Image (cartoon, rainbow, N blue to C red; front, top):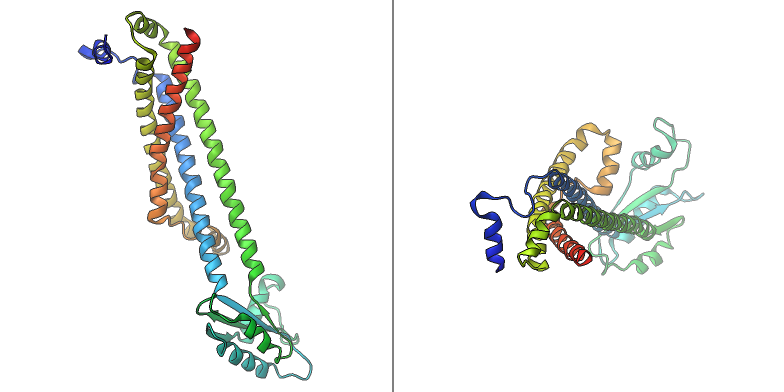
Amino acid sequence: MTKFGLSQLFRRGGAAPIVPEKSVAGRTLLLLITIMAFLSAVTLGGVMLVQKSAIAWSADVGRELTIQIRPVEGEVMESNLRSAVSLAQSTPGVAGARALTLEESQALLEPWLGAGLDLSAIAVPRLVVVQLADPVDADIEQLQRNLQAVKGASLDTHAAWRQQLNIMAGTVVVSGLLVLGLIGVATVLAIVFATRGAMASNREIVDVLHFIGASNRFIAGEFQGRFLSIGLQGGLLGTVLAILFFALTGAAAGRVLPSEATAQVGVLFGQFVLGWDGMIGIVLVVPVIAALTAITSRVTVRRYLSEAS
């Protein structure tokens, strides 16, 4: 009897398929796959947000230099500031330079010293912010040499900050990928147990199929089709929930969290805007989960039948 004939034999006249479509095990597996797909999509989306933010960090930090001018006895601070700004603006590759006011310099110290302190009696170092037109073409060495003429001046290229940001972002990305791997392993194990449970509960039907000449390949295909449907449904539900999660989180972050916490979250994840690349990455979770479910169920059924024969 052909595969088509066997399928018609078990499904003609409204008869139940080999694998029941609305069983308790099937609904439980659907819920589990939905949860796994949601966790996978959220993890993948978080990794992509951190990676995009890290690229933006590196680009922003790489386009900015800071000249620090320490107070030196006998030197006029305002004159040194003007000299540093002039030297920076004359450097190739520099788009502009601006000296921070005394109030701006004091405001930078408030997170460490607290607000409301009178710093007028303290000789606070002054800063000059230098914007680069192109970090590759900027002649940083020439600027460092020229600044030697300004006493108390030193140049900070923010290279250490960039390295720390890249290390932090890389750690988050690798951790997210490891979590994705663990979720995948947990999903495979759940599918294996669900498939073996479905095989055990439908053992009589499988024996009848063997008796009338059905091959293991045909039986595995029937289970694969059913589990593929479950994987598609669960993956789609989990992905939709993940997209709603990012949309709601992005809308509520600025309203629920304090301004300081919102700023910190924004530094790490941006504005929770996935973009088209992020949306495509999350949507790809659906076919991956479906294929993983179908392939795992087919391999499990073939192995189960080989052990039972």
